[in-house]
Image 1 (spheres, rainbow, N blue to C red):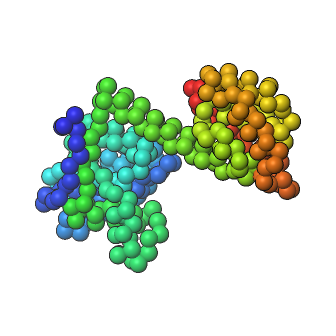
Image 2 (cartoon, rainbow, N blue to C red; image 1 turned 90 degrees about the horizontal axis):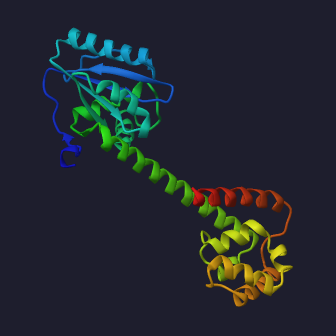
Length: 268
């Protein structure tokens, strides 16, 4: 995979048209300029085949108008939203680069003392960053490499979402039954998930017998927990300092949804 590493574009050759794009979900803003400052007005185009063809036609027209020899297309890193355009351009005679969003923000502050985003301003700022040699080439993977990248990105998003759900669940459990983790420290464990799903509230746990709960915990934990832990959990549930004021119903409802989502993700 050595050949797939991105490289910094430190200089832009004379005779190069710099075509930049501010990527959006529904539509994008394009802009064409040269090293000596000749430029077009910003223009909009959709994330459709017709929109991409409009961008390409505007780019070629600007290349011919300014007498450029080659085209460099640049955009701000925006996750997956730029991928359709990048794949469209992959078969064109262009070099494609991307810039860091942090560089874009800092450059806007330098230019007009404002980091605010405007569609017309952003592609011009991206062009300025490229002129300064702060862009990176991009690699468009194909075949197995493309599939592997997408699977890896999907996994990273899934892990991030799962972590966020777990954090929210732990916060709500702390509000309702803060002593719960004294007995069951791993909220993702099968035993903890079973008790949270079946009993939900400390009041329900407090009504159980230590023998019945102990047997459930023993089966779920494959012998790791038993009657001793059940007795401790029941005692803590009966004397919990968890909140019981108005609004608890809404908190419990949210807690149920988070718990069910987390359990569903664990099963996938």
